[in-house]
Amino acid sequence: MNTYLVIIASILLLSYLLHLAAALLNLRALSPELPAEFVHVYHADAYSRSQHYTRATTVFSLTRATIVLVVTLTFIVAGGFNLIDGVARGFGLSVIPTGLIFLGLLALLQALLHLPFAVYATFGIEQRFGFNTTTVATFITDGLKAALLTVVLGGPLLAGILWLFETSGPHAWLYCWLAAVVFILVVQFLAPVLIMPLFNRFTPLAEGELKEAITGYAAGQRFALQGIYTMDGSRRSTRANAFFTGFGRFRRIVFFDTLMQQLTTAEIVAVLAHEMGHYRLRHIMSMMALSILQTGLMFFLLSFFLYNPGLFAAFGMEHISVHAGLVFFGFLYAPISTFLGIGMNAFSRHNEYQADRFAARTGADGEALISGLKKLSVSNLANLTPHPFHVFVHYSHPPILARIAALRKVCGGSREI
Image 1 (cartoon, one colour):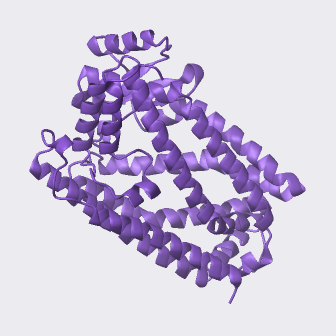
Image 2 (image 1 turned 90 degrees about the horizontal axis):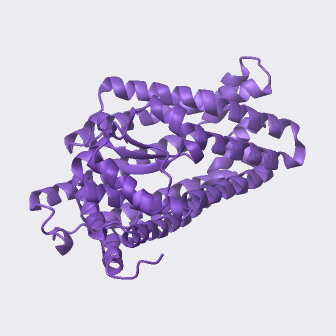
Image 3 (image 1 turned 45 degrees about the vertical axis):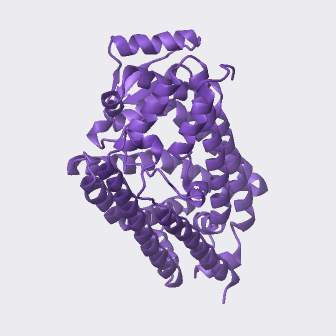
């Protein structure tokens, strides 16, 4: 049996088992006893409902992972990649268009595989637990817009990568990395003004008490606000959020309209202070820098496997090509990606604690941030007692009880960062 096929099958199975173990431990960690911190916030029936939601989403996630694993292994063993390659080559085009057709067909098959799960997640689980406000029309148009963006933005990038690997020799990985970095930076600048408005409506925050409180806090921190906006997140979900996006003059502070409805002025200012902490403490830049370094590592390792005959034989391919090599390397890179993802999550959780401390030590009301986090946890049916291993593998934010405990230590302490 082909060694690479054994390695790839093992990677897929071990990844599945990792997530299965985390999910099962997380289900076992569910406790019917309401944590004392939430006794006056969470009603017993709502808390029970949050646990039902955790169970439902976990079972759904495991079902989806199982089906995707079986379909993927079957597709590999049955020679599906070679079949798609044959279809792409059947158009008789040059190397790069053939590669784009191959990758496009695979993306289409993947989208079709995941579509039923997306439909059930949105109109089944999210609908049943009162989160979904997405209409069928919005769901369809969102999918079409996302597909169009993939073609318009991703198509040229993929074409450039294929061309560089075909023509640039041993340093192609470096040129591809530089091209990817430029692409990432351009998208970061364009997203707030061109991409995100395709999906949501952004409205400047109206004059009034909230805007005065926000500008007052920002002035106290000598932070120049480029724009404060509300976003119609309620078009798709009742969930609430806030975030910074963009850089320079394209920088925006965005509040979901659902957040505005659920939190008080003091709580919203505290959430803003937390988001400002990410910006002031350079978390956004450091996360982007790490992402760029990961991209460079990926391209560097890719250069060693791109034309490996054994790897292509594992997938039953008749022809060796750059476009297929990109896909096959992804299977080998999966363990590294998982390991780096766990590390990035740990770094992100560290950053969340720092941003909370920033908010509490720079004039925002720490207790207001705590009460805001509690309200959001209740409205989102958050799992209050996740298993530590599940947190380690999946969480980019600390569990809510850990955040509250850390904030309580800060509220009465020094105001220095």
